[in-house]
Length: 249
Ligand code: PGA
Image (cartoon, rainbow, N blue to C red; front, top):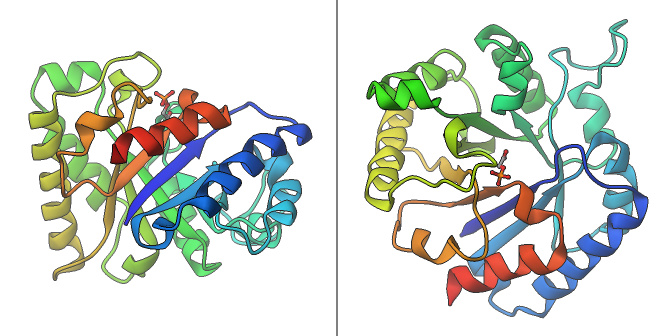
């Protein structure tokens, strides 16, 4: 099963539902869908309700791009809790994206976000990734291990956690890691997850960073890679669908 998750970031208005409907129509036509892949769109908070109503009982699933670190209601101006996104139909939530880490989400905040999202039975897509300097200094594994072990706990329901490895230097830059290096990193992440959860686990690990329809096929050779978190190239139905098609070509 491969995941294709579209991270729309701060893009989209209600009529953008046309894009998601087209993706859904494509996914519906694909008889192999059930076994092969899951398509998930994470629009801004403002579109969650519109999208999830329109896509009720449809193949494409809806997620949120973030949530606040308190469970339900509180007097935090502008904040949106896991409970609230759940009520709007979000089945997934991205937590720990480098954009949000840069805005101040530290490990202790992220741990609360993951805890409360899981408590609300929302699947967490937890993002990790090194920056350019860390990569150049060959600190990648050390950084990833810390990002995982500082936030994830054995007691968390691993069935509801997905990891997205997103090297910061590759997000929105057009640069992707060498396939041989990426393969080793995904293996390392899976090994680290086994240590945290103290036994064999089935946590999926996705790659994100400049994935598009022209480079997707090369990722197919990494059999242990479970899917993709796609930013820029997920905002039109054609590009998103082409990514899925070209992956399986
Ligand atoms: P990108 O973004 O595909 O535009 O590089 C990925 C992300 O930020 O999740």
